[in-house]
Length: 355
Ligand code: NAD
Ligand code: DAU
Image: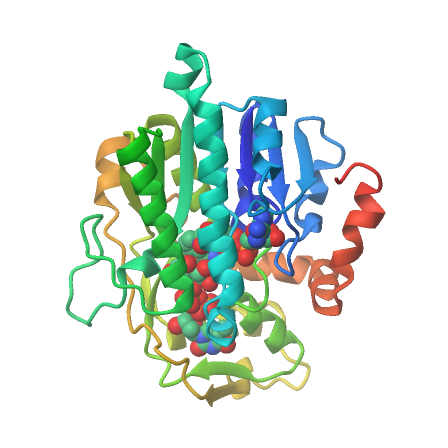
C-alpha cells in the first residue's frame, strides 16, 4: 500500500480517486482537514476498503511514525501543504509550520522507518514530494521556461516555504540516502478546486452575480495543467523516476490571467447564460495587485517526457470546458464549500472511523 498526506485537498483527492480507479493497491490517507481539506471530494469512494482515511497533523511528532509502523507502506507521497499564496501573505506562520516543519517531521519518520526495512523493501521504497514551479521565482516575458536546473528564487512566503521543504527533501537524499523523488508542477485546475483560487473563484462568483476580481493589470502569466495530468505525472515519477531527481511538470499552456477570465466567461455565456442576457464579462473588476506578484511562470517539461514518456492528455480547451461543466453539475459541493457545511462531512459520513 501507499501512504499519502493531504489526500482530502484538491490535488490529493484527485490523486486518490485516480489511483483507486486504476489500481487495486490500498491508500492510507493522512489529512489534517484544514479549511482546504474536504472529505466530500472522496464521497464517490463510499466505504471502499482500499481507502483508509486518518485525520491527523503530519507536523505532530509520532503521527506519521505510527502510521508507517502499522501499515508498512511501500511509498509515501507528500501532498499536504498550505497552498494559497494570498493566505501566505496575510499570515505566513501556518506555511512555515506545515510546509517546512511538517515536511521535516514526515522526513524524520520516513527515515527511521526506511532505515529498518528488510533489504528488498528498502530498495523498493520511495518518498515522493509534491512541489511547485513557484520555487523558481518569476520569469520575464522572453525568458526560457523553468528547467530543473533553474535557480531557486522564491518570492512569497508560500513559495519560500515550499522551497525550504524541497531543500530538506534533497538533503535527506544526499545525507541519508533516502530514496526521494520531487515533482515541481505548474498551476493545476479541475474538479474539487477550492474556490479561493483563480479559476474556481471566477466560476462561483460569476454564477453568484459577484465581481470577478483581476489583480493588477491581469497580464500575469501562468502555465495551466489539468489536475488529472498532474496525477498521471506523479504516478509516472513514482514508478520510474530516478532516485534523488527532480521532475518539472507542466502543460505547455501559458495564458495571461485576463485570457483565463475571458475564457471562463465565454464558457458560462454558452453553458449557463445570465438571466438578463448580459455577458459575464460585465462582472470583471480590476482590483489592487497581489504584493510581490510573480509575473510569469512557465515549465519546461521535456525531462519527464524524455525519461518517463509522460505528456499531458488534456488540452486547455477541453480541460477548462470539463472544469466549468463540473462546477455547473455539482452545485451541492459548491454550496457546502461556501456555507462551510463540508466541514461537517467527517461527522456525517465518517462517524466513528475518522481518527
Ligand atoms: P490544498 O490546499 O487544496 O490541499 C492541501 C491539503 O493538505 C488539505 O486537504 C489540508 O487539509 C491538508 N493539510 C494541510 N496541512 C496539513 C498537515 N499539517 N497535516 C496533514 N494534512 C494537512 O492544496 P493542493 O492545491 O491540493 O496542493 C497539493 C500539493 O501540491 C501542495 O504541496 C502544493 O504545494 C502542490 N502544488 C499545488 C499546485 C496547484 O496548482 N494547486 C500546483 C503545484 C504544486
Ligand atoms: O504555480 C503553482 C501554484 O499555483 C501552486 O503552487 C499554488 O499552490 C497554487 O495556489 C497556484 O498559485 P497561484 O498564485 O498562481 O494561483 P491563484 O489561483 O491564487 O492565482 C492565479 C493567478 O491569478 C495569479 O497570477 C493571481 C491571479 N488572481 C488570483 C485570484 C485568486 C487574480 O487575478 N484574482 C484572484 O481573485
